Image 1 (cartoon, rainbow, N blue to C red):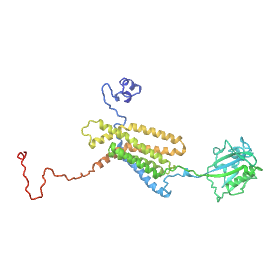
Image 2 (cartoon, rainbow, N blue to C red; image 1 turned 135 degrees about the vertical axis):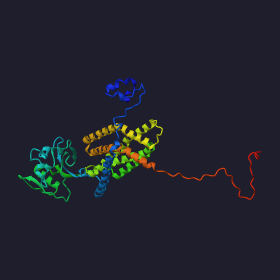
Image 3 (cartoon, helix red, strand yellow; image 1 turned 180 degrees about the vertical axis):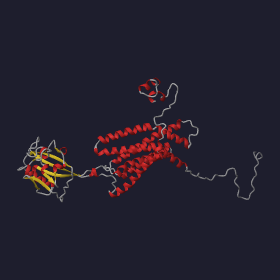
Image 4 (cartoon, rainbow, N blue to C red; image 1 turned 30 degrees about the vertical axis):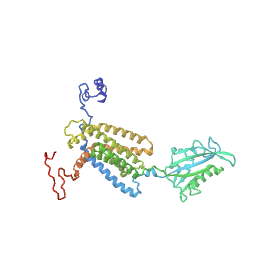
Length: 439
């Protein structure tokens, strides 16, 4: 009805926007609003049993699995194997006298290192533990530096240009001093054992003998580098402490603004939503990074914000009502139920738009942060179920429970008034008669 607050728009806007004129109050006739959204008469609390059962099961599963995996993995409750697995990158540095092209024949282009069509390239002619290096990579994983690194050699007054090939392998090859591999190279029409069991030394010797015969050994450098991912580690205990402090402050504010039963229900709901989002990734063992905790924290924040939709609406209904006995439990219960129903439409719209944005970032955003948005989507699902189905009945349950608490009044001794102080001496007291002793 906001679009028709102007009387001149009263007749034009309903037709333009395909609205029902009966649901728009006529300002000229001082009509009151009668339509409060599509969910005004819907009671979402009817699904409180199965919603509570689902959330309870998620919380219980999360507690059990966090204890088990926390003990097994030294406090790390997540499955981070896919993101912490080591990988190997083959680095081949080539020295050239030209800054435009590699001057060494036999290794002057990417096709000399890896070619999908032939078997004369380097990676097809070297086998490690029964597999050719070409089987452990693809064309998209092989690259050559665009700009060389220039180095001036003062001994012979010559500037050299270093190019490097980077080949990312799909399997991890341990390259420690005591590591031993079955390395074979293609020579004389067949594969023969390499000159060394060391990955670096075996490949460099083979390239020097077969690809760069007669060239200076200093023109080539080969290294199998181990890549160990270092992920951001937002410690779970510190984040829980920060969330606990924030929820405690919110609890005090909400209790003062909306009554203790509403504040406790909204705060516990926010904590439950965040925990369920974390627990989902723990007991399903989906491979994630600890950054997923940030998405759960965002879910807790949105749970508090969305709970304000219903609590503010309840307060408006309470203030606008002309009911004589407004402080009864029955009347306040009815206000809260109406508040949840009338705020359901903007609540669901906000949740859907938030989920849409999170899903878009999950699908097309940076890979290291995609699980944060997935955790936010899970949080939105849990907070929708809680705020619509459990916020009202849990608040009413707490209201009944808190209503039974009675504090005994503090008894204080009242001084006795109107009694004259008695004298402890033996002298007789003077009698006072009203009217006689006035003069």
